Length: 101
Ligand code: FES
Image 1 (cartoon, rainbow, N blue to C red):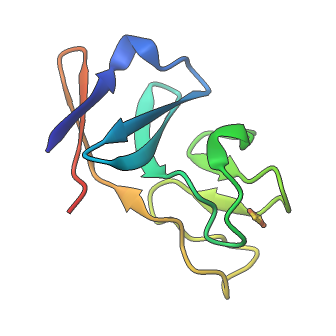
Image 2: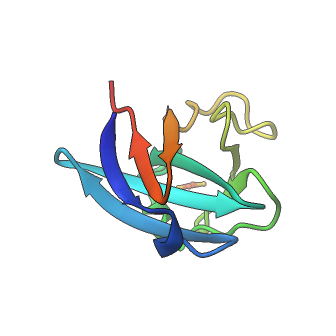
């Protein structure tokens, strides 16, 4: 587990892009839960920093609207799409740690 950001730096229903160990990781917070995923959309590579959060636990890519589950990474409407890579998250006090392995 490596430190990624402070919990307080990620707005509710918002995102924060960080670089951890040379890897770009997108942190997303919805309803108090923080998720971590890869920054590139697995569909056609759009940067997900601009993705929309329309509901808790889901991230909608702004390019073609694919909606990824932030727990499983799966896009339910397009199961043929490679899932979004999700990184395990651990919260320690006000600090967010992610597991990149
Ligand atoms: S590039 Fe993200 S949905 Fe197509």
